[in-house]
Length: 355
Image 1 (cartoon, rainbow, N blue to C red):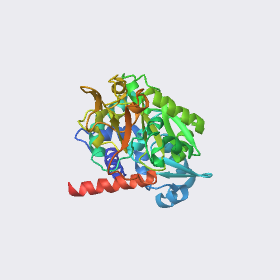
Image 2 (cartoon, one colour; image 1 turned 180 degrees about the vertical axis):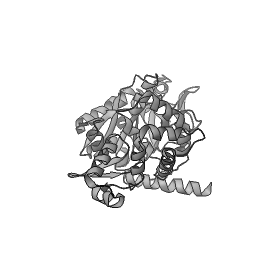
Image 3 (cartoon, rainbow, N blue to C red; image 1 turned 90 degrees about the vertical axis):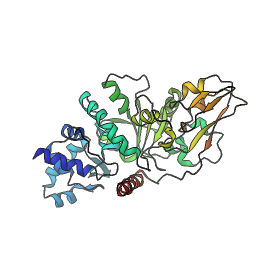
Image 4 (cartoon, one colour; image 1 turned 60 degrees about the horizontal axis):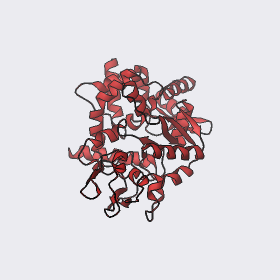
């Protein structure tokens, strides 16, 4: 019976926007068994994919409201479901595995879970890479877009942060995971920034701490200095910003291995080098997370298909030989992150229909 509940939970989670594909090894079932009790698995499958108040869930499940509220809050604290605050009310919903339940394990992450996740990642990553709409995108560091004309607000990271009312910061789960696996990273650890409902969730679950706008802007400066790629949610109203390195972030790490990473990363700019100014100092090559710059005969050059438009090379070029130019054919991201997830789900369904 317990095996059946996890199989059904796997199928249920696969209906959520980013999916939860089955594997030949069954590692996804091992992950679910580690995270959910059979009772929690059953309750998760009775939740909607949008936030609901406890009375509505109680009416549907037949569970007494006080008992249900306690169970749901325990699951939210464990990072198994998502909780939204509406004044004094708590609303709960089922939530996808990535970006979602995996990231919500920040407090409880252990080596066993990390090993299971790494085993599952190739199957999950292949599924996510095939989807046209990406959950995350790359945004240029602020100093790299000063000379770029008509930059849209959704590509001005500092302006996006200044619009936020509630902000939190937490440890990068990717660096924590790699550290538990023995692959320590010397990049800053506390660099993941959440906003709004996500910030509230992390604060309530004691996974992150509230910060003000000034602190958040200083974190962005620190990330740029360290050479981290800024990856906000792929939306105009951002829900979070990850500050990523290609040694720990699974998205950057795995796309870096491909011949054309730019084909799999959502971004709006690409670097351009002025060969008449470049002195081939090599600093931009050291700075690039994607190996997108190589030494040419008389000047450094951008490798076709590798630049993801992060702007890290621009911000440190003392000769000002590198600039960002807009990528052709791009369109504005969805308005909110919830709109993005709707598009992700539609893309998955369209992809499944033609396979």
